[in-house]
Length: 173
Image (cartoon, rainbow, N blue to C red; front, side):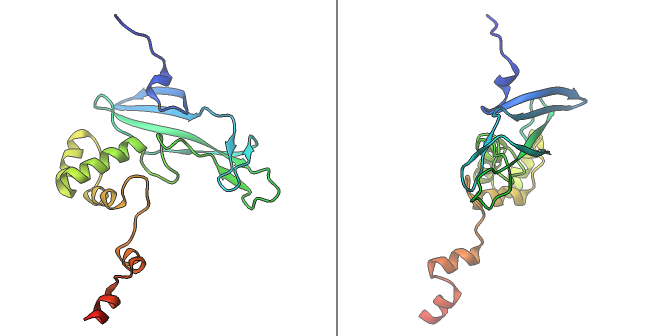
């Protein structure tokens, strides 16, 4: 028995599809946040005063051997709190969609991380090419170092915070 579904069944919660089109070998999905307002990331004041809009194009997983081009319409809001130093801020999408400043969707980032953990750099890159994921070997290795939902830590800064840097080792001998 066939079941009926809508466009929203294909998108993570919190997104609304404006347009879905097939252009050659690419599925183009234009979407935006389903919320009418957004909270300031600094003070938490909810604003519905849209200042501007711009588009983000995070890379996404392919579907049915076709490239998926996700186009997110991001609104910039004015913070209405008098005490808040943030004048204009961009709305945040749910972590299931993408993180701020990320170049990939969360689900693609998860696949990149798992392939990096399981296979390493070059083997993961080889498999990714066959799966239609244009990701370099360095990106796989970097995603393993970073971990899920965190920022990269350079070896020098992590050594200095633990107190086991090169100078500490040299003076101990």
